[in-house]
Each structure stands twice: as structure tokens, then as C-alpha cells.
Image (spheres, helix red, strand yellow):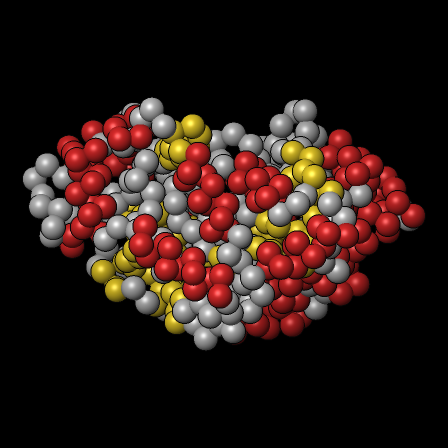
Length: 428
Ligand SMILES: [Zn+2]
């Protein structure tokens, strides 16, 4: 609590106002200088919203602040983008600041306690383009871990080799996307059952996940079936940031980002409620992001968190993949939230047609006995107002655990109706 208060004071003293950021961006980057040419940065609400489509053909260097061109030392860019991937440059200070901010999660106490008993951590997040691998590795090291930086989605770090290395090293903490973690656990079960499998799973006390949106119910199923703490992080390389909290919510930190929400027609909705996420970074000057449409569908609420955080954010999924059903906007995480209440599945696909919704579920072997498919069918039909047809398929139907993953698994709900507005991201 004390640490958080000190930090929030420090953040406030370092963060800029939206006006300062807009004028800074316009004076220090080639892109904003041109983009805001006909605008007055003091009239913030009149400034045009920046989308990924505006960045098509723009050189990353045009978004880099001239003040920091000789000081930046790390480059990253977004995936899952329609339009162009958004670049992000980091100075050493930015990067260290990000690690310190991440350490504000109250989960850090749990992580440190486990690291005291077992210092070995395996970092199986992606390196390159994203900064997820780098930042989670650095976070673990900062708190005392010996980290095996294995990465993922590469030919050198195949799922089979990663699984074997996890068995060899017996880590207490693993960072990975939920899907990768579950794939490795399944390979270990197949290849090392029973003794080494049980010992290995028993030793893993914390899973740190990011880069793949994960509903709360799915997080809880993973916690239950692997008896571990799942720290489920929602953040993005372009600067949006939230803190996972043991209270069950994901919190926004005052002073990091200024958030605006918009509806379908780009009408502003204010700072609370459900809408499309647009943010202005108040901290990162190296690659200023002003009125930048991250375009996730989110809900922001006030929080009564026991750790003292005041605001929470709930992601629903990417707006461009969302759909309208029963007078509500559904993101893929809204389906996921319901599906995983009824068991731990490996993966799922939802097809929405004019007459019905078809849900394909993929079994996860250790959780098979636990499924309640009729409960799921009832709840889905009731909340969508449509007839839902559920089918259960063996593992391998959607996911090949043994194969290097080629795409990020985010296109999970497919709207096949004529009214569909879905656009599939170019880079997954
Ligand atoms: Zn909390």
C-alpha cells in the first residue's frame, strides 16, 4: 500500500498533461508535426484520432521523438494489427520504468515468495517484435530469479524441446501464453507420465501470462487444474498498460495513460463504461501516442480494490473482431468467459450464423471429466438469445501441441452473418 502511494506520487510528478503530450508530439516527431498541422494542440478534443490505418506507409522513425533518437535502445512493434503495426522505441529508462511499474502488482509478493524457495524460472514468451519476452524476463530477474530465456514460436525453441527443458530445470515460475503453457504441459504428460510429469507440474507455482487475451474464467480453470497462481496480464507494446491484481480485477494506474472511450460511430463516451479504447500515453515521450486508437473493446469501472487501486479495466477483445448479438456488443472474451465456466478446454471456435451459434470445443485431457456441456449450452443460449449447438472434439482438432505455433490465437469467434463487420488482422 505504502509502496503504491509513493509510486503514484512519483508517477504524477513525472507524467505530463494531455496538452503537453500533444504539443510535445507535434514538436518532436515528424509524423505528428504533419498530422496536427492544421490543429491547435491546446484544443485536445479537436485533435484527430490516430488509428493503425493512419500509420500505413509511415516510417517508424517518423514516430520517434527527435529528442531521444540517440538514446533509444530497444524497438518493438504490435501484432494483431489491421492497418500497420505500431512501432515503439524504448530508452533504457523507459524499459526499466516499465519493469518497475509491472512490479506494482500485489502479485509480486507471491512471486517473490516462490522464487525464494525455487529460483528457477522459464520464460517462454516471444522475443523480437514484442517486448513481452524481454520485459517479463527482466521482471523475474529483478526479483531474484535465474531465468531460462527460451522464447517461443521459433524453430530453435520447439514445443517438444521446451517441454523437455521444463522437465530438466524444474522451474517454480513460468511465463508463457496460456495456450503455449497448456501445450507444453500436455507434451510433458504424454512423454513423462507419471513420475516426472507429476513432479514437474507440482513444482510450477506461478504462471505469468500475457500476449494472448485470457478471460477470468479461463485463468481460474488453469489455476484449478494446475494448482498454481495465474498472473494474467493485459498490456500492449504500444504503451497501454494495466496491472493484474489478486482481487480479481485488472487495474489502471493513474498518470500513465489518459483514456477515452468511443462507440461504433466514434462518438466519445467519456472515461467510464464500455467502449473502444483510445489512449494518450502521459509517460512515454520516445514514441508519443496521442489519441491513439488501440481499438480493444473494454469496460472501465471504478474499483473498491482492497489494495487501494481506484480503477479497473475489463478487456472484451479486439473491436474489429467484435459482433452485435442480443442488443449487445460481444468480444471474443465474452464468449470465452462463459465457455470456461464449464471446464478447461484447450481451445474453442464460435461460428455465428443467422439462425444459430455453433461452438466447437477442443478437449484438454486432464480436465475432460469436468465438463458441463448442457450447463454451457443453457447459459449461452440464454445470454445470446439464439439456439446454440455445442460440439466437443478431441485434442488436436484445433491445436497441435507439438507443432511450432505460427499464429496468435485471437480469431476465435467468426461472424458469418451478412451484417458482420469483422476484419481479420493481417499479422497474428
Ligand atoms: Zn485489486
